[in-house]
Amino acid sequence: MDKEKFFSDSLKESAETKLNIEKYCKEEVLKAIDIISGAYRKGKKVLLCGNGGSAADCQHIATELMIRLSHKINRPALPAIALTTDTSNLTAGSNDLGFENVFARSIEGLGNEGDILIAISTSGNSPNIIKAAEKAHEKKMFIIGLLGGSGGKLKDYVDLSIIIPSSNVQRIQEGHITVAHIICELVEFDLFG
Image (cartoon, rainbow, N blue to C red; front, side, top):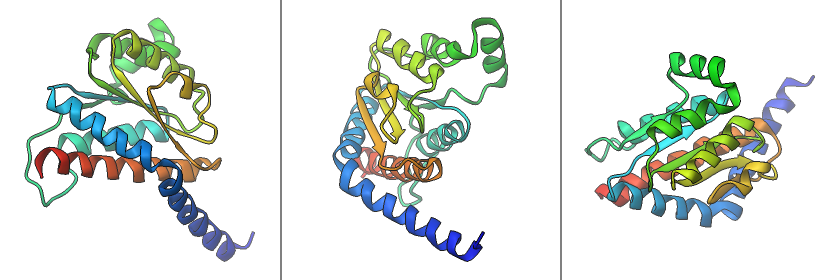
């Protein structure tokens, strides 16, 4: 393998993906900002779920909302919970209810009407994320899907899908965190100036 070529090609593919996000996802990202800001103005919260690297993204995004992203704005915490972090809950839920129900159970206990669920899946086909979206609909939550490729099955279960225009998992994950940073920073700006 030519490591130098791989290095250059990866950077070019990443940059191209991000430019395509601007081209194909701008409307959806701006809508997500308005929806999340509106929910926060009504005293609602954001819940997040995903698997693997997407689970890590859930923690990252929840932290940006709870603590802050921009160091230019001193603001109060925004309620955000990554449903991926409580190992006792995840293992008990998986053991007792099956892994496909683990996030749905947390949404059943924590989700309220008007809250936001950010469901992250690079494939859009994770059964536990689809079940989480179904439960969020029952709870009358608004569901934003951070997806990739074709959007998979999950795109039919969310209210707003942001589909990163790539079929490469690494580029999709990079796109998810880029979009999330933009959303978090503009939500802060919307709410706190």
